[in-house]
Image 1 (cartoon, rainbow, N blue to C red):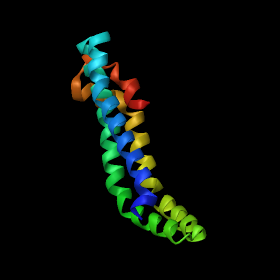
Image 2: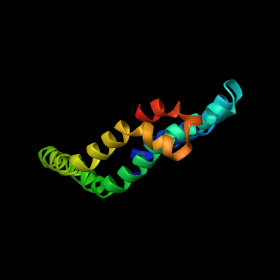
Image 3: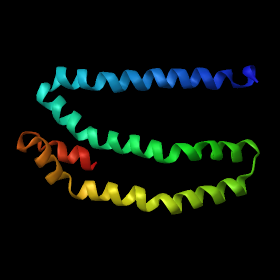
Image 4: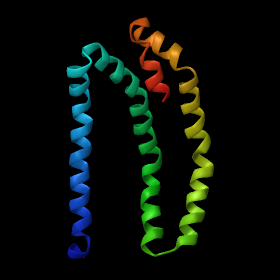
Length: 126
């Protein structure tokens, strides 16, 4: 089994390294090129999507084992049925908060960090 899956492990390790390198270097490059104020705008704008990513990871992580189970036993019909069921049930819990925060990003950021960082609204909404 190791020899069959070792290429996936090395690929995943490589992609994880590149992701972390990109994720960690963004603020340094922005700070060097555009200045520290732009780093703050970038950080504020990406705090909300990062929060949603964490919450959605918590929400959907229990289902990943079941998705892998259906994939492992090659039950595509069961996988499709389960995927549609999970998507249908969780859609309101995903779409409504994201749309609400996107629509009210300006007042949220104004109340959070005041007018100095209002440029981060477009990053948050994107």
